[in-house]
Image (tube, rainbow, N blue to C red):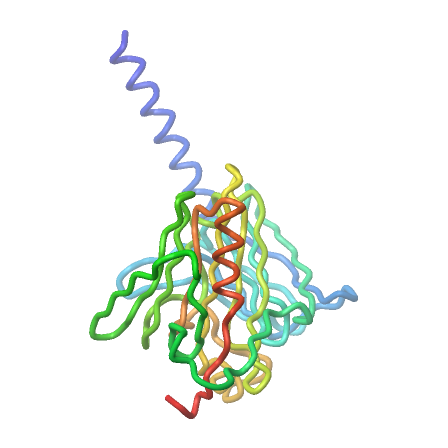
Length: 267
């Protein structure tokens, strides 16, 4: 009897998994509009289900009608245009998902660094360490990392290097969140350099990820405006936290929000 129960449970799991994979394999489509309800052209739409190797991410760019169609998109859709606020949406049992994109007025604005940055850690972006935590560092041939863990169980990590991280955070964070949001990261002398994403899990714990690259504005200027290939973006500077309590979040945000930007000519 017990063996039959176990087999029945496994069958349910397999059926559920097949159903989920089948749903993600189906096409999803929609229309992307601006705040006035007009179709948006030049919006890059890409999914999260990747194949390897080589890596493959389903993506397309909207035309004048603002429409998109993707197959095998995975559980999350990303909508990107460098002059608009970034947006990601969860696909929950639907084949049609429309979106309204807003301006980037609420961007995370990072000032240029002034004076010495020797007391800070980072690369293109420099951060002030938390006075209440001991920073741990690591280094390899192509990256360096800094971070610390709080007594509340949360942890902050940062990665700096040519291919240190991804501009987008891990898809599992979106999937496990009851709510999440995104905004552009903006350096006044450069333009949009990345994405600041944050969310709250169903258990109340928080996460945040800021992925940036100072070459994004230059790359965007060389492409057909307002086009930029976001799904291929690599973050040379990535910092964020996971599993943070409310108290952890304050300490972690203080570090991230202390960011200043070095002059890219210094590289």
